[in-house]
Image (cartoon, rainbow, N blue to C red; front, side):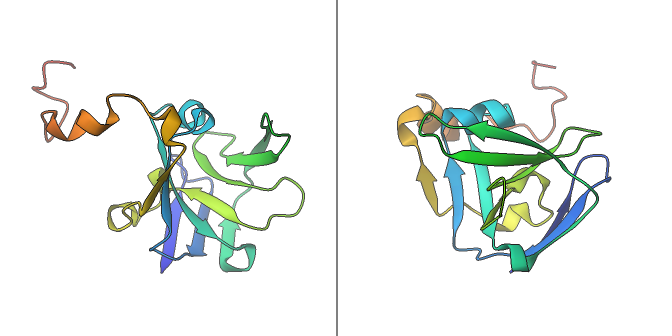
Length: 138
C-alpha cells in the first residue's frame, strides 16, 4: 500500500510503500517518551520504497542493549516522523500520527506489552466525545 504523510508545518513530506498487514503498536518506554503518548503505532518500509522531501533532523538514541536508532523529526515543528538505523538505513518505521492514511492502518500486533499502561485495556469503556468542546476537560 502506498502511503504519504508530512510533518505538522509541511516542511517535510514523504511517500512510502508499506505492508498494511504489518502495523505495530509499540508500548516501550522509549516510544512513550518520544511520542508523548502511551504507545506509538508504526508502519515499516524499506529505503528503496521511501521518498522524503525536505531535510529531517536526527537524534540517535542508544538503547540499554547498545542498539542505536536514529529518530527523524522536523527541525521546525518537531513532528516525529520515523526511526531508522543511524548509518545505513535498512528499514524506516514511520509514525502513523503523520501518515495521511492512518485511519486505514490498524495495528496487527502489539509489542513491549510489559511497558503498557495498566489502564490501556480499559480504554474502550471510556466515553468518547466528537470534539474537546463539552467534554468538561477543556
